[in-house]
Image (cartoon, rainbow, N blue to C red):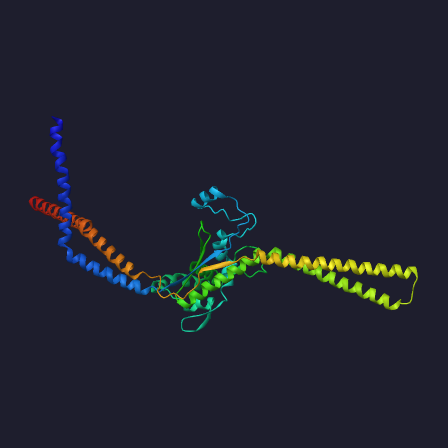
Length: 392
């Protein structure tokens, strides 16, 4: 019996929910003009926002680093499984500390970013700037960024406009990258947001992106970042080999000079003692000849070491292939104007619908309660007046 009684109630609940949803839909339909007006205002706001944001152009460069096949940590089936799991088996991190996974940190480091500030660039109109000048003078922001920057300027004026110096590493002050001015610090942050490097964990392909408000500046900056990154990695990898080459060249120069001096001593002795046939003269001549021969052998060995050191430098020099070279972009990547306008219109629709369904009933309920309170207070005052008249 209980089950028979509960069934009709359960059948009514979906109907009541459907009726509620239909009622909400009817209420929105009745206010469709209001919703349309709100959406038009949302579209207008989206247009203002979309056309207030400056255009940004991005240039991407893809590099394939040299793959060393002589040493691998995993081989065969294990290497295949590692590559499927996203683990690179050819990093050789033990022999090379600057592997591709560290390139994003190198590009974002303070010395690397500061080295880009004085790079000469040209915009699409052919005017020349440095990166610092372009960021300070030619990079624009939306109009609301000026309003939001007013409090900071006011605080700076109150402090007296003293330029703060930031010690980034707290070390020796001889390196200019250790201490940055407030302007330099803000420029480093701005350029970090515009220049980035990403590495594919499976293929080690390096993608360098440079985003600027001018397409030509974007392409030039991307090409500069690539060349600077190559120089940095090349200098690091060939550092020891170049030092070995310098040391070998120094030894070779000393051995060469010693060989020439030994030859000159032998020649001078022979010229002075051509007619002497004594044993002491013969022994001295043999000694000088042996010294010259030893000096020649040493000179020959050091020359071989120099050649080996040169080949070592060439061997350790990394080679990069540009899969995607830098090109001047045609279309901007931001702002997404259609998305901004559609988002503002959708936000206006949601806000208007919420106001109609929830805000308006609350306001009406509040107004009715205020009227009831005023009516009850008026009745109370009238009752009091009647009582006072009866007493009088």
